[in-house]
Amino acid sequence: MPRLSPRPAHTVIDPNRRGPLATPAEVAEYLGVPVKTLYQWKYRGIGPNVHKVGRHLRYRWAEVDAWLNAQAAYDLAV
Image (cartoon, rainbow, N blue to C red; front, side):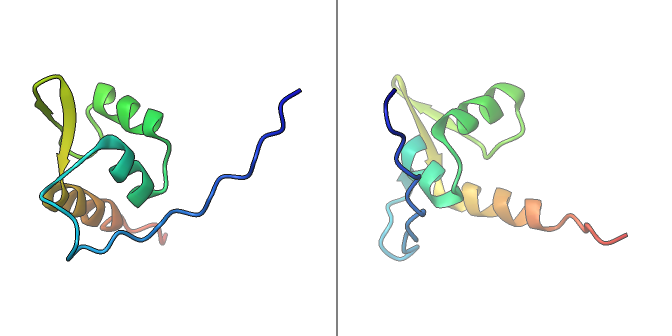
């Protein structure tokens, strides 16, 4: 049986050093979720806005940050 290594902690991506577009792998690392989750969110229409550039998926960092801020707006206190 193959030994599963623990998932590495996500790396903080410096907003000042990132380009305007991000790959699914970069966004997944930033959000701390698997890339597969991003594809599921895209299919369900609930994740950050995604764009096709040729045959590749790309995210605009500004839209990822806006989506993330909107998620934090939910009040969980009852």
